[in-house]
Picture (cartoon, helix red, strand yellow):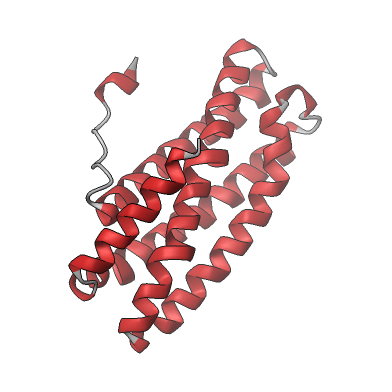
Length: 172
C-alpha cells in the first residue's frame, strides 16, 4: 500500500531527473532487501519473503540494469567529451558498475529462487555489501556528477539521452 504514495518519477523528457529518481528507487529496494534478509533470518522463506524477493529481483534485473546502461552508453561518453575534469569520477563510476554487477550476479539467483537461500547470514551480508556499494556509488553520482552534467550537457545531448532511454525501455 505504501507504493501508492511514492513520489512520481519524472518522465523521459527529463533524463537526469529520471536517473535521480532511479537512485531513490534503488535505495528503496536496498531498504527492502535489508528487511528481506532480516525476515528470512528470523522467519525463513515464506510467501511474504518470496514476494519481496520477486519485487527486488524484478527491479534490479530490469530498471537498475537500464539505469547502468543509460549511464554507460549515453551519459558518461557525453560528459567525457565535454569535460576532462570528470574523467576520474567517470572512471570510478564505471568500475563501480562492474563491481556492483558482480555483486548482483551473486544475489540474483537467490532472489530469483529464495527457497535456495541455504545460509541466511551469508545472504544478509551479501545484501549489505551490495547496498553499501550502491549507496556510495549514488552519493558520488549525486554530489560529483549530476549537477555538473545539468550545466555541461547541451539540449541536444539531453534529447539524445532521452531518445536512447526511451528506445531501451520500449523493448521490455
